[in-house]
Amino acid sequence: MQANNEISGERPNAVDADVLERIKAAVGPKGYTLDPDEIAPLCQSWRDNWHGWVPMVVKPANVDEVAAVIAICAASATPIVPQGGNTGLTGGSQPHATGTEIILSTSRMNKVREIDVLNNTMTVEAGCILADLQIAASDADRLFPLSLAAEGSCQIGGNLSTNAGGTQVLRYGNARNLVLGLEVVLPDGRIWDGLRGLRKDNTGYDLKQLFIGAEGTLGMITAAVLKLFPKPTEIQTALVAVPDPGASLTLLSRATDAVGEQVTAFELIQRRPIDFVLEHVPGMTDPFAEAYPWYVLMEISGQGAPDSLRDAVEALLGDGLEMGEVLDAVLAANRAQGEALWKIRESIPEAQNHEGQSVKHDVSVPISRIAEFLERADKLLEAAYPGVRCVAFGHVGDGNMHYNPVQPLGNEGADFGAEYSNINRIVHDLIHELNGSISAEHGLGRLRRDEAKRYKSDVEVDLMRTVKDALDPTNIMNPGKVV
Image 1 (cartoon, one colour):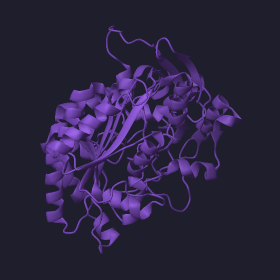
Image 2 (spheres, rainbow, N blue to C red):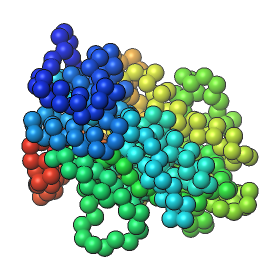
Image 3 (cartoon, rainbow, N blue to C red):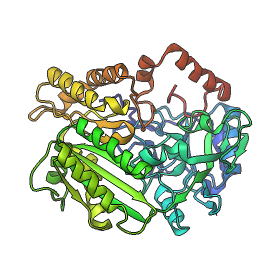
Image 4 (cartoon, rainbow, N blue to C red):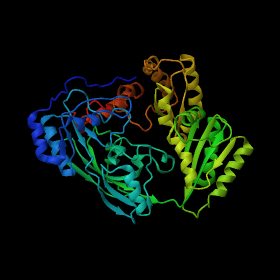
C-alpha cells in the first residue's frame, strides 16, 4: 500500500497562537472548531488510509471571510489545506501529520446564488453538495449533468478542484467543460471575481482553467457559474453482453453513428466485478440467465416523446446480435428498471472491498487502445503474480478504465499490498507506452504526485512548477500535493 500519514500519541499544534486568534476573530465563533472529535474525521480519508492532523478547522461563511483567513495565513506563512466534502481518493484533501497546517472548509458556503434559465447557467457556492445542485437544476426544468458515486456528499468546489469526471463525460465532458466562470481567493488573500456566464470571452488567458484540476494548490475556489442543459425527456438504458472489449468499441462506434451525442453513458464491465456484486451486495440479481465475459451498460437520452428512442436502440442491439458484437441484452422497460441496472455498476467498488487487498488504478488511454491495454495488462500481471484477479470496469466511452488487480485467492492481503509499487509500475508503464494518463479523473494529490514525474516531460513539470511558484511563491496552498 501507499505510505500513510498517521497520527499516534499526542496531537501536535505547530501553528502560532496569535495566528489562531486572528483567524477566530475573522470568522466568528461559528466559523471554526478546535474540538479534536470534530477535527479528526476531516483529517482522514474515507479510503486508502491517509491520516494527518491540524489544530483548527476553519469554516468561513462567505468569500470575504475566506479572503481574510488566507491573508492571515499568507502573512504568517501558515499552510492551508482546502477541503470540500473530503471524498477524494488520492490524499489531496488531507493534511500532513505535523500540525503546522489548518483545514479551510467550504461546508458553510452552500448557497445557490442564481439560476438563469434563459442563459442556462447556475451560480453556486463551492460548498454546495453535488446532488443538491442536480435537484436545484431539475426543479428549474434543467439538467446539471455531473454525476458520480459520491454525489450525495461531495461538494462542487472539490469537484472543480479535481476536475471530476463521472458517468456522463462521454456526452457532457469533465467538470472543466461545465464551468463558465469562477470566483477564487488567491494565495495572497486577493479575490478574483471571474463569475461571468459567457460562452464567448476572447480577452486573453482563460484563467479559470488554471484553478480547475489544480486541487487547491493555486488558490481556493469559492463560487462558480455552471452550465445547465435541457432536461432529457426520453431515456433508454440497456445492459448488453459482449464477447470482448473490442466488440464494445465497435458497438460504441455504431451507437454514435446511429444517434450521435444522444449516447449519454457507455460503461464497460468485466464479469468478475459483477460476480462480486452478486455475492456481496444484498438484493442484487443477475439480469441474465447465464454469465457472459463482458458487459456494456449503455444509456441513450434525448428530448423526444417517451420511447421515441426505443426503436433506434432495439435496431442497434439487433444489428449487434447479427454481427456477433452482442451476445444478449436487457433493455429496461422503465426508469426503475434502468436504475436497477445502474445499481449493479455503482455497487462494484463496495463489493470489491469484500474480496481482500486490491491495487486501484484510475487510468485512461485513447479509446481505440482500450482493448489492447486490458489484454496486455492482464497478461503482464498474471505473469508476475499468478492467480491475480484482475478487475476492470469504467467509462469506456471516454477512455477511462478503473483497473484494480485483487489479491489471489489464498494469498495474504498484506503480501499483495506490499507489491503496490511494483504493480503500479507494470500498469503505469504500459499506460505511458499507449500514450495514456495514470490519473484520468481522481487527480494526483499525494498518491500520484511523485509518480507523475516519471511520465511527464521535464518541460511539462517545469511549466507546472513555474505556475505554482508564480501564484503561490510561499507554498501555503495545499503544500505537498500535485507538484
